Image (cartoon, rainbow, N blue to C red; front, side, top):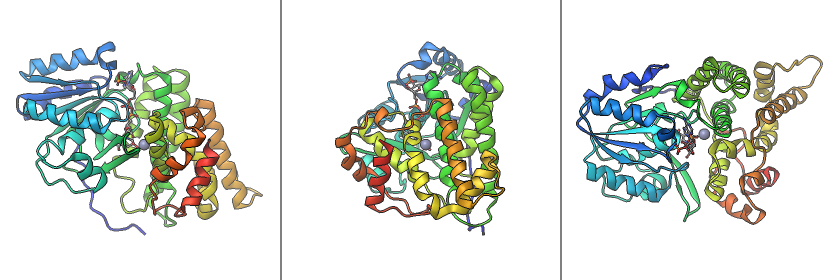
Amino acid sequence: MLGNFTYSNPTKLYFGDNALNGLNDELPKYGKNVLLVYGGGSIKKNGIYDKVVDILKANGKNIFEDGGVMPNPTVDKLNEGIARARAAKADLILAVGGGSVCDYAKAVSVSVNCNEDAWEKYFIKFDDVTCDVVPVGCVLTMVGTGSEMNGGAVITNHAQKLKIGHVFGDNVFPKFSVLNPEFTFTLPKYQMISGIYDIMSHILEQYFSGTDDNTSDYIMEGLLRSLIHSANIAVKNPTDYEARSNIMWIATWALNTLVAKGKTTDWMVHMFGQAVGAHTDATHGMTLSAVSMPYYRYIMPYGLDKFARYAVNVWDVSPEGKTKEQVAAEGLSAMESWMKSIGLVMNITELGATKDMLEGIVKSTLVMEGGYKVLTVDEIRAVLKASY
Ligand code: NZQ
Ligand code: ZN
């Protein structure tokens, strides 16, 4: 049965090969001071930076820059960004980049007008936002996280070996996001497939939970089929606009909060992945692919019906003459073969996790309670051991 919920998603999307023109509609709504946030320089190489700056200038904006946002943005960088946004008296934070840049912009936006320590307040205590939020807009250049249309912001604290996400309310969602699939064409293949698996994982985290008959599960099966189909094309031909645009749109649907409404969700793969990320600083999507098979094989018996349904509806496994266990296991094998075929990392050793990190990663893994089995510390250790 669908649980009770409220649903609102205020992010306005501009999608397509001319989506950047949407900035001309949006910029006049905000004051003059724009903090332009970006990553390590890819947007300068591929020309997106110049295009954005031209539009900002044409709209009479004062541009203040905050570049150098790293993948998996750190708490030190966050504190630097808060200071920059204050100095600029930013009326709008414009994030141009991937999930890291967009997440970071949101984390800055809720902290500018707040005196407390941002890490403690939002990522340790999970406090609500009690101060004025600076509006954020996002020009997306890397697909996967869904950050363009949600309230998520994930920050890494290397000193504390923690990587933690706060899911803010809809007052923190980007006010608008620009989604031009062509902006993703310059992504290295490693990043593209990492993003593809991040999308798949977001869907599966929400799919593998609950035993009710829920419309979201049917939507998610469709999203997964489309993702697998488009990924197979994009891996062979990264500039196939149709495939890349579908992947971009699926990413947004996968984590714009819609499919989670009225149902329970798991998120344990992300807890493992974030713990691995806190110790290795590895690429987000690859931390998820590296732990997924051991985790799903472990919990399969506890959610057998759903795993069998997944095998049939997503991987076209024929159930005829087979036990439910056989069908479910075949589905996971099909998933594993596909993951290998597109080039995903399948173990955490390849991501830099060494044996002496095991206990630390176990400690950094937060336990979620919405999946088919609430894991004990011993079970967490067993899944991680199987992921090396
Ligand atoms: O920094 P630059 O030079 O721009 O290079 C980036 C970065 O090295 C590069 N890149 C991005 N667009 C490019 C490009 N290179 C060439 N051409 C382009 N068009 O790609 C690298 C990775 O970028 P990043 O933003 O780090 O990737 P992603 O979008 O995967 O974001 C990862 C972060 O998002 C968090 C992750 O934990 C991680 O910190 N997540 C956020 C979520 C949310 N808001 O809901 C949910 C996710 O589960 C995830 O946890
Ligand atoms: Zn993710």
